[in-house]
Amino acid sequence: MEDSRKRTDWTIESARPVVERFLLNCKLGRVIFDMYTNFGFPPEITIEELQGRGYDFDKEEAMKSFNERFKKHQDMSRNANKNIFVSPLSL
Image 1 (cartoon, rainbow, N blue to C red):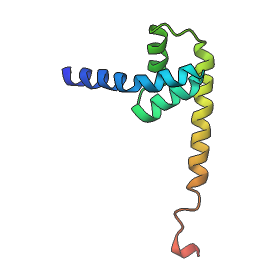
Image 2: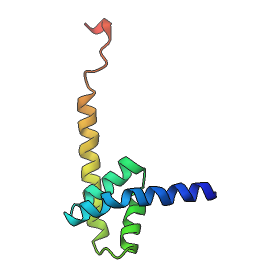
Image 3: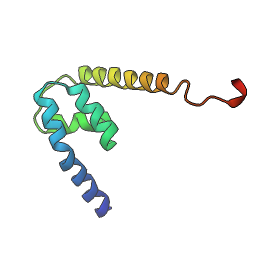
């Protein structure tokens, strides 16, 4: 349990520059998305962490922005992988 807490603290600290950089540019949806994809932080935890550190923003709007980015990412991945695996029998 102690090890897990140390890893979490390290992850939060290593992610801090990412958060600060994007918050300066007001791209909250991207911050939440990057924290999720790069560090495995669930969006809800990222939002709570930011609010706990004094950042003031609309939680619903932040989740809407995250969901839009996530859907766009899924669509791009789906389209990119459409024709990669082609069965030799279909040629």
